Length: 202
Image 1 (cartoon, rainbow, N blue to C red):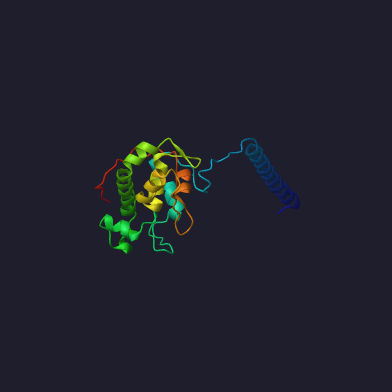
Image 2 (cartoon, helix red, strand yellow):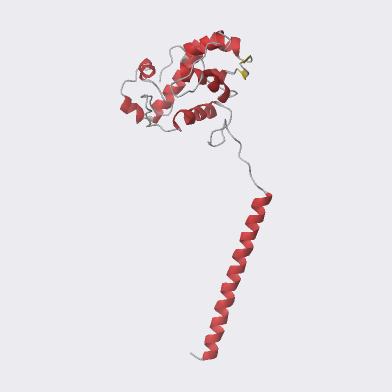
């Protein structure tokens, strides 16, 4: 190849490469500019690092599940509580669930069991929900979703004692989670889709 032709090819390649670099630098500067001008602040949900959820029943159950197990279906904690919503074996027996290994492998059953438990707790606490929602106890505004979350943590009976004693009878689990903390963290969700049902099944 003639030396002059070789030089022309080299110059063309250099100019092409230089043009690509300029485009990349310009695009990067645009991205940086845009990101600084349009920074996005994601909402916090009860101080947990979880995606933003609507304040409906789905948001309620997913926020509670994240607190209980980080949303993991197959997890068993150090006290033997099971699954995404950390069920105790006695509670599962109420819904005729005895094979815990099958329960851990069955997301649909876990979801159904959670809904059924919410229905049962709502039935047990129906009078307390009617009397207490809207009140403020120990600085916490009482809501229906907060009551259902607290019942999931401690059992409906302990929530009854807390509400009827105006907050003087308290409960905390082995990890330090309390009725008060659940009333606060999970308050304000719309859980009206859950209907009180003493005989709910999973």
